[in-house]
Amino acid sequence: MSGYDAAGGAGMKGFLTVQYAKESPDLHTELFVKVPFGEEDNMTWRMNMSFFGDPDGGEISAYQFLTYLLPFRTPKMYFADIARSTTNYIIITEKIPFSKKGTPCQPYEIHPTVGKYQDYEMKDPASPYYALMRAMARFAAWDKQGRFESVRHIFEATTYARTGGRDKVLAENAAKAATKAAATQEQIDAYRANARKEMVAGAAKTWKRTKKHVETTVRFVSEIAPWMFPQDVKEKEFLDSFFARLELVNKLAGPIHMYCNDGDYSDMFFGLCHPNLQVDNAFFWTDEEGVYHAGLLDWGGCGYMSYMNVFLGCVSGALPDVYLEHEEKWFRTFADEFKRFGGGDMDPDELVKQSRLMFCTSVLGTCSNVAVQALSLCTEEEWKGISSKQDEKVM
Image 1 (cartoon, rainbow, N blue to C red):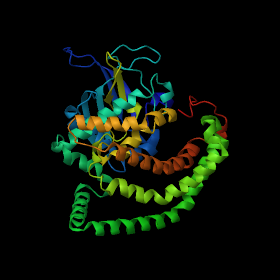
Image 2 (cartoon, rainbow, N blue to C red):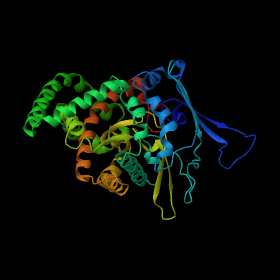
Image 3 (cartoon, rainbow, N blue to C red):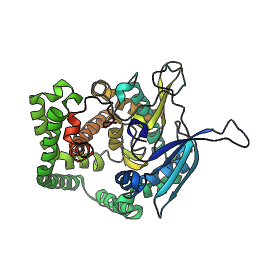
Image 4 (cartoon, rainbow, N blue to C red):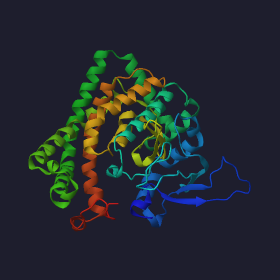
Protein backbone atom coordinates (compact mmCIF):
# COMPACT_ATOMS: atom_id res chain seq x y z
CA MET A 1 0.00 0.00 0.00
CA SER A 2 1.23 3.49 -0.76
CA GLY A 3 0.18 7.10 -0.38
CA TYR A 4 -2.83 7.80 1.81
CA ASP A 5 -3.77 4.10 1.93
CA ALA A 6 -0.50 3.23 3.71
CA ALA A 7 -2.05 4.66 6.91
CA GLY A 8 1.28 5.78 8.34
CA GLY A 9 4.92 4.94 7.86
CA ALA A 10 5.85 2.75 10.82
CA GLY A 11 4.98 -0.60 9.26
CA MET A 12 2.73 -2.63 6.98
CA LYS A 13 -0.97 -2.76 7.81
CA GLY A 14 -3.78 -5.00 6.73
CA PHE A 15 -7.32 -6.10 7.52
CA LEU A 16 -8.44 -9.61 8.39
CA THR A 17 -11.96 -11.05 8.49
CA VAL A 18 -12.37 -14.15 10.66
CA GLN A 19 -15.13 -16.63 11.40
CA TYR A 20 -15.32 -18.36 14.79
CA ALA A 21 -16.33 -21.94 15.45
CA LYS A 22 -18.40 -20.54 18.30
CA GLU A 23 -19.64 -16.98 17.89
CA SER A 24 -19.58 -14.54 20.81
CA PRO A 25 -20.56 -10.86 21.15
CA ASP A 26 -17.17 -10.31 22.84
CA LEU A 27 -15.22 -11.39 19.74
CA HIS A 28 -14.62 -9.12 16.76
CA THR A 29 -14.75 -10.66 13.29
CA GLU A 30 -13.08 -7.64 11.63
CA LEU A 31 -9.44 -7.38 12.74
CA PHE A 32 -6.46 -5.12 12.10
CA VAL A 33 -2.95 -6.51 11.53
CA LYS A 34 0.39 -4.70 11.72
CA VAL A 35 3.84 -6.07 10.85
CA PRO A 36 7.16 -4.31 10.18
CA PHE A 37 8.37 -3.36 6.72
CA GLY A 38 10.52 -5.98 5.04
CA GLU A 39 13.95 -5.20 3.66
CA GLU A 40 12.51 -4.93 0.15
CA ASP A 41 9.65 -2.63 1.22
CA ASN A 42 11.08 0.27 3.23
CA MET A 43 14.43 -0.50 4.82
CA THR A 44 14.95 3.06 6.06
CA TRP A 45 11.85 3.00 8.25
CA ARG A 46 12.46 -0.61 9.29
CA MET A 47 15.84 0.52 10.64
CA ASN A 48 14.35 3.62 12.32
CA MET A 49 11.64 1.65 14.09
CA SER A 50 13.33 -1.70 14.75
CA PHE A 51 17.08 -1.17 14.99
CA PHE A 52 17.53 2.01 17.03
CA GLY A 53 15.97 2.05 20.47
CA ASP A 54 12.84 -0.04 20.98
CA PRO A 55 9.70 1.66 19.61
CA ASP A 56 8.33 -1.66 18.34
CA GLY A 57 8.83 -3.25 21.75
CA GLY A 58 7.04 -0.30 23.37
CA GLU A 59 3.96 -0.88 21.25
CA ILE A 60 3.94 -4.63 21.83
CA SER A 61 4.28 -4.05 25.59
CA ALA A 62 1.54 -1.40 25.60
CA TYR A 63 -0.97 -3.83 24.10
CA GLN A 64 0.15 -6.70 26.33
CA PHE A 65 0.54 -4.99 29.69
CA LEU A 66 -0.91 -1.48 29.68
CA THR A 67 -4.07 -0.83 27.68
CA TYR A 68 -6.40 -2.64 30.08
CA LEU A 69 -5.27 -0.26 32.85
CA LEU A 70 -6.10 2.97 31.02
CA PRO A 71 -8.95 5.48 31.58
CA PHE A 72 -9.91 5.73 27.89
CA ARG A 73 -10.72 3.47 24.96
CA THR A 74 -8.05 1.47 23.08
CA PRO A 75 -8.43 -1.31 20.49
CA LYS A 76 -8.90 -4.79 21.92
CA MET A 77 -5.71 -6.81 21.44
CA TYR A 78 -6.05 -10.37 20.14
CA PHE A 79 -2.41 -11.33 19.60
CA ALA A 80 0.98 -9.64 19.85
CA ASP A 81 4.49 -11.03 19.67
CA ILE A 82 8.03 -9.94 18.83
CA ALA A 83 11.16 -11.92 17.96
CA ARG A 84 14.13 -10.10 19.46
CA SER A 85 16.63 -12.03 17.34
CA THR A 86 15.13 -10.75 14.07
CA THR A 87 13.04 -7.69 15.20
CA ASN A 88 10.04 -9.21 13.41
CA TYR A 89 6.72 -8.65 15.17
CA ILE A 90 3.00 -8.94 14.65
CA ILE A 91 0.07 -7.14 16.28
CA ILE A 92 -3.56 -8.19 15.79
CA THR A 93 -6.32 -6.02 17.27
CA GLU A 94 -9.94 -5.25 16.59
CA LYS A 95 -10.50 -3.13 13.50
CA ILE A 96 -11.89 0.25 14.55
CA PRO A 97 -15.16 0.85 12.61
CA PHE A 98 -14.33 4.24 11.12
CA SER A 99 -17.21 5.82 9.23
CA LYS A 100 -16.78 6.53 5.54
CA LYS A 101 -15.54 9.98 4.61
CA GLY A 102 -18.32 12.46 4.02
CA THR A 103 -20.98 10.58 5.98
CA PRO A 104 -22.73 12.30 8.91
CA CYS A 105 -22.09 10.61 12.25
CA GLN A 106 -24.60 10.01 14.99
CA PRO A 107 -23.56 10.16 18.67
CA TYR A 108 -21.08 7.39 19.54
CA GLU A 109 -20.37 6.51 15.90
CA ILE A 110 -16.64 6.58 15.12
CA HIS A 111 -15.76 9.54 12.90
CA PRO A 112 -13.90 9.04 9.60
CA THR A 113 -10.15 8.54 9.88
CA VAL A 114 -7.86 11.49 9.19
CA GLY A 115 -4.31 11.38 7.85
CA LYS A 116 -1.37 13.03 9.59
CA TYR A 117 -1.19 16.77 8.81
CA GLN A 118 -4.50 16.58 6.95
CA ASP A 119 -6.72 18.39 9.43
CA TYR A 120 -8.16 20.38 6.53
CA GLU A 121 -10.31 17.28 5.89
CA MET A 122 -11.88 17.41 9.37
CA LYS A 123 -15.35 18.82 9.91
CA ASP A 124 -14.19 20.23 13.25
CA PRO A 125 -10.38 20.65 13.31
CA ALA A 126 -10.25 21.98 16.89
CA SER A 127 -12.42 19.81 19.16
CA PRO A 128 -10.51 16.53 18.66
CA TYR A 129 -7.45 18.13 20.26
CA TYR A 130 -9.41 18.85 23.43
CA ALA A 131 -10.31 15.14 23.53
CA LEU A 132 -6.64 14.20 23.06
CA MET A 133 -5.58 16.59 25.83
CA ARG A 134 -8.11 15.07 28.22
CA ALA A 135 -6.93 11.54 27.38
CA MET A 136 -3.26 12.46 27.84
CA ALA A 137 -4.04 14.22 31.12
CA ARG A 138 -5.89 11.20 32.52
CA PHE A 139 -2.96 8.98 31.56
CA ALA A 140 -0.50 11.40 33.19
CA ALA A 141 -2.59 11.76 36.35
CA TRP A 142 -2.93 8.03 36.88
CA ASP A 143 0.81 7.63 36.34
CA LYS A 144 1.42 10.19 39.10
CA GLN A 145 -0.91 8.19 41.35
CA GLY A 146 1.28 5.11 40.84
CA ARG A 147 -1.33 3.06 39.00
CA PHE A 148 1.24 1.80 36.49
CA GLU A 149 4.02 0.87 38.91
CA SER A 150 3.54 -2.85 38.16
CA VAL A 151 4.70 -2.27 34.58
CA ARG A 152 7.20 0.55 35.19
CA HIS A 153 10.27 -1.65 34.65
CA ILE A 154 8.92 -2.81 31.26
CA PHE A 155 8.47 0.69 29.87
CA GLU A 156 11.65 2.04 31.44
CA ALA A 157 13.49 -0.68 29.52
CA THR A 158 11.81 0.49 26.31
CA THR A 159 12.45 4.16 27.05
CA TYR A 160 16.15 3.85 27.75
CA ALA A 161 17.03 1.16 25.20
CA ARG A 162 18.64 3.79 22.96
CA THR A 163 20.62 5.54 25.70
CA GLY A 164 22.55 2.73 27.34
CA GLY A 165 19.84 0.61 28.91
CA ARG A 166 17.53 0.91 31.90
CA ASP A 167 20.02 0.11 34.66
CA LYS A 168 22.66 2.52 33.37
CA VAL A 169 20.25 5.43 32.89
CA LEU A 170 18.47 4.96 36.22
CA ALA A 171 21.82 4.81 38.05
CA GLU A 172 22.92 8.03 36.34
CA ASN A 173 19.61 9.70 37.22
CA ALA A 174 19.90 8.62 40.85
CA ALA A 175 23.46 9.94 41.08
CA LYS A 176 22.41 13.23 39.51
CA ALA A 177 19.47 13.54 41.95
CA ALA A 178 21.75 12.83 44.93
CA THR A 179 24.24 15.46 43.78
CA LYS A 180 21.46 17.99 43.32
CA ALA A 181 19.97 17.21 46.74
CA ALA A 182 23.35 17.81 48.41
CA ALA A 183 23.97 21.13 46.63
CA THR A 184 22.85 24.58 47.70
CA GLN A 185 20.58 26.62 45.47
CA GLU A 186 23.51 28.93 44.72
CA GLN A 187 25.59 25.97 43.54
CA ILE A 188 22.73 24.69 41.37
CA ASP A 189 22.26 28.12 39.80
CA ALA A 190 25.99 28.46 39.12
CA TYR A 191 26.12 25.00 37.52
CA ARG A 192 23.16 25.77 35.28
CA ALA A 193 24.57 29.15 34.25
CA ASN A 194 27.92 27.63 33.30
CA ALA A 195 26.20 24.77 31.42
CA ARG A 196 24.09 27.26 29.47
CA LYS A 197 27.18 29.24 28.43
CA GLU A 198 28.87 26.08 27.18
CA MET A 199 25.75 25.09 25.24
CA VAL A 200 25.49 28.48 23.55
CA ALA A 201 29.18 28.36 22.63
CA GLY A 202 28.81 24.86 21.23
CA ALA A 203 25.78 25.86 19.16
CA ALA A 204 27.90 28.30 17.16
CA LYS A 205 29.74 25.30 15.72
CA THR A 206 26.52 23.69 14.46
CA TRP A 207 25.00 26.83 12.92
CA LYS A 208 26.91 26.46 9.63
CA ARG A 209 25.15 23.16 8.85
CA THR A 210 21.82 24.30 10.28
CA LYS A 211 22.04 27.56 8.33
CA LYS A 212 22.13 25.59 5.06
CA HIS A 213 18.97 23.72 6.07
CA VAL A 214 17.23 27.02 6.92
CA GLU A 215 18.30 28.50 3.58
CA THR A 216 16.91 25.43 1.80
CA THR A 217 13.64 25.74 3.70
CA VAL A 218 13.30 29.42 2.78
CA ARG A 219 13.86 28.50 -0.88
CA PHE A 220 11.35 25.64 -0.55
CA VAL A 221 8.72 28.08 0.73
CA SER A 222 9.42 30.90 -1.72
CA GLU A 223 10.49 29.08 -4.90
CA ILE A 224 10.09 25.31 -4.92
CA ALA A 225 6.59 24.75 -3.47
CA PRO A 226 5.12 28.22 -2.77
CA TRP A 227 1.59 26.99 -3.49
CA MET A 228 1.69 25.02 -0.22
CA PHE A 229 2.09 28.07 2.03
CA PRO A 230 -0.13 31.05 2.95
CA GLN A 231 0.78 34.43 1.51
CA ASP A 232 2.06 35.99 4.75
CA VAL A 233 4.56 33.14 5.20
CA LYS A 234 6.07 33.90 1.78
CA GLU A 235 6.60 37.60 2.43
CA LYS A 236 10.26 38.63 2.29
CA GLU A 237 10.01 40.50 5.59
CA PHE A 238 8.76 37.37 7.35
CA LEU A 239 11.34 35.06 5.76
CA ASP A 240 14.16 37.46 6.69
CA SER A 241 12.96 37.58 10.30
CA PHE A 242 12.45 33.81 10.26
CA PHE A 243 16.10 33.34 9.39
CA ALA A 244 17.28 35.65 12.20
CA ARG A 245 14.97 34.08 14.76
CA LEU A 246 16.15 30.58 13.96
CA GLU A 247 19.76 31.64 14.43
CA LEU A 248 18.74 32.76 17.94
CA VAL A 249 16.79 29.55 18.57
CA ASN A 250 19.82 27.53 17.47
CA LYS A 251 21.92 29.31 20.10
CA LEU A 252 19.35 28.76 22.83
CA ALA A 253 18.17 25.24 21.96
CA GLY A 254 20.46 23.63 24.54
CA PRO A 255 19.42 25.92 27.41
CA ILE A 256 15.77 25.52 26.41
CA HIS A 257 16.01 21.73 26.58
CA MET A 258 17.84 22.01 29.90
CA TYR A 259 15.14 24.29 31.32
CA CYS A 260 12.31 22.00 30.17
CA ASN A 261 13.90 18.60 30.84
CA ASP A 262 16.14 19.28 33.83
CA GLY A 263 14.62 22.34 35.45
CA ASP A 264 12.45 23.00 38.48
CA TYR A 265 9.33 21.60 36.77
CA SER A 266 10.94 18.60 35.09
CA ASP A 267 9.68 16.01 37.61
CA MET A 268 6.11 17.29 37.42
CA PHE A 269 6.09 17.37 33.61
CA PHE A 270 7.51 13.86 33.13
CA GLY A 271 5.94 10.43 33.10
CA LEU A 272 4.60 7.46 31.16
CA CYS A 273 3.11 8.71 27.89
CA HIS A 274 1.83 7.90 24.44
CA PRO A 275 4.64 9.52 22.43
CA ASN A 276 2.94 10.52 19.18
CA LEU A 277 -0.68 11.43 19.69
CA GLN A 278 -1.53 13.21 16.47
CA VAL A 279 -5.06 12.87 15.16
CA ASP A 280 -4.18 9.93 12.89
CA ASN A 281 -3.17 7.90 15.96
CA ALA A 282 -6.57 8.17 17.60
CA PHE A 283 -10.25 7.65 16.86
CA PHE A 284 -13.04 10.03 17.80
CA TRP A 285 -16.74 10.14 18.52
CA THR A 286 -19.15 12.62 20.07
CA ASP A 287 -21.73 12.09 22.79
CA GLU A 288 -25.35 13.31 22.84
CA GLU A 289 -24.17 16.83 23.72
CA GLY A 290 -21.66 16.98 20.88
CA VAL A 291 -18.57 16.70 23.11
CA TYR A 292 -15.64 14.91 21.47
CA HIS A 293 -14.05 11.82 23.02
CA ALA A 294 -10.90 9.98 21.92
CA GLY A 295 -9.58 6.44 21.85
CA LEU A 296 -5.85 5.92 21.35
CA LEU A 297 -4.03 3.91 18.68
CA ASP A 298 -0.47 3.21 17.56
CA TRP A 299 1.54 2.87 20.77
CA GLY A 300 4.98 2.67 19.16
CA GLY A 301 7.66 4.05 21.50
CA CYS A 302 5.38 4.13 24.55
CA GLY A 303 7.53 5.04 27.54
CA TYR A 304 8.69 7.71 29.98
CA MET A 305 9.25 11.19 28.60
CA SER A 306 8.65 14.90 29.02
CA TYR A 307 5.08 16.06 28.46
CA MET A 308 6.43 18.89 26.30
CA ASN A 309 7.74 16.44 23.73
CA VAL A 310 4.41 14.61 23.79
CA PHE A 311 2.46 17.84 23.26
CA LEU A 312 4.65 18.65 20.27
CA GLY A 313 3.84 15.23 18.78
CA CYS A 314 0.16 16.16 19.10
CA VAL A 315 -0.57 19.83 18.40
CA SER A 316 2.05 20.28 15.67
CA GLY A 317 -0.44 18.65 13.32
CA ALA A 318 -3.11 21.31 13.89
CA LEU A 319 -3.96 23.91 11.27
CA PRO A 320 -2.08 27.16 12.04
CA ASP A 321 -5.16 29.33 12.55
CA VAL A 322 -6.73 26.65 14.76
CA TYR A 323 -3.53 26.34 16.79
CA LEU A 324 -3.28 30.08 17.36
CA GLU A 325 -6.89 30.31 18.51
CA HIS A 326 -6.96 27.28 20.80
CA GLU A 327 -3.39 26.72 22.04
CA GLU A 328 -3.74 28.08 25.58
CA LYS A 329 -7.18 26.55 26.03
CA TRP A 330 -5.85 23.13 25.00
CA PHE A 331 -3.11 23.23 27.62
CA ARG A 332 -5.44 24.55 30.32
CA THR A 333 -7.75 21.65 29.49
CA PHE A 334 -4.81 19.30 30.15
CA ALA A 335 -4.06 20.94 33.52
CA ASP A 336 -7.73 20.86 34.57
CA GLU A 337 -8.20 17.20 33.58
CA PHE A 338 -4.89 16.25 35.21
CA LYS A 339 -6.19 17.67 38.51
CA ARG A 340 -9.67 16.18 38.05
CA PHE A 341 -8.18 12.68 37.68
CA GLY A 342 -6.04 12.97 40.79
CA GLY A 343 -2.68 14.13 39.43
CA GLY A 344 -2.53 17.26 41.60
CA ASP A 345 -2.22 20.96 40.84
CA MET A 346 -0.38 21.98 37.69
CA ASP A 347 0.63 25.47 36.55
CA PRO A 348 -1.00 25.90 33.11
CA ASP A 349 1.01 29.05 32.36
CA GLU A 350 4.27 27.14 32.81
CA LEU A 351 2.84 24.37 30.65
CA VAL A 352 2.14 26.86 27.86
CA LYS A 353 5.54 28.54 28.17
CA GLN A 354 7.53 25.32 28.03
CA SER A 355 5.45 23.96 25.17
CA ARG A 356 6.10 27.12 23.15
CA LEU A 357 9.82 26.92 23.87
CA MET A 358 9.99 23.30 22.72
CA PHE A 359 7.91 24.14 19.65
CA CYS A 360 10.51 26.81 18.77
CA THR A 361 13.38 24.32 18.91
CA SER A 362 11.43 21.82 16.80
CA VAL A 363 11.44 24.23 13.84
CA LEU A 364 15.18 23.56 13.50
CA GLY A 365 14.31 19.90 12.99
CA THR A 366 11.59 20.83 10.52
CA CYS A 367 14.13 22.68 8.39
CA SER A 368 16.39 19.65 8.52
CA ASN A 369 13.49 17.44 7.40
CA VAL A 370 12.82 19.68 4.41
CA ALA A 371 16.42 19.35 3.26
CA VAL A 372 17.08 15.74 4.22
CA GLN A 373 13.68 14.14 3.57
CA ALA A 374 11.23 16.25 1.55
CA LEU A 375 13.83 17.07 -1.11
CA SER A 376 15.35 13.60 -1.18
CA LEU A 377 12.08 11.68 -1.46
CA CYS A 378 10.91 14.09 -4.16
CA THR A 379 13.26 16.15 -6.36
CA GLU A 380 13.01 19.91 -6.81
CA GLU A 381 11.75 19.46 -10.36
CA GLU A 382 9.09 17.02 -9.17
CA TRP A 383 8.00 19.45 -6.45
CA LYS A 384 7.60 22.22 -9.02
CA GLY A 385 5.16 20.02 -10.90
CA ILE A 386 2.97 19.46 -7.82
CA SER A 387 0.11 21.83 -7.05
CA SER A 388 -2.04 19.97 -4.51
CA LYS A 389 -1.62 18.48 -1.07
CA GLN A 390 -3.59 15.49 -2.32
CA ASP A 391 -0.96 14.67 -4.95
CA GLU A 392 0.22 11.06 -4.63
CA LYS A 393 3.84 12.16 -4.09
CA VAL A 394 2.81 14.36 -1.16
CA MET A 395 0.70 11.58 0.28
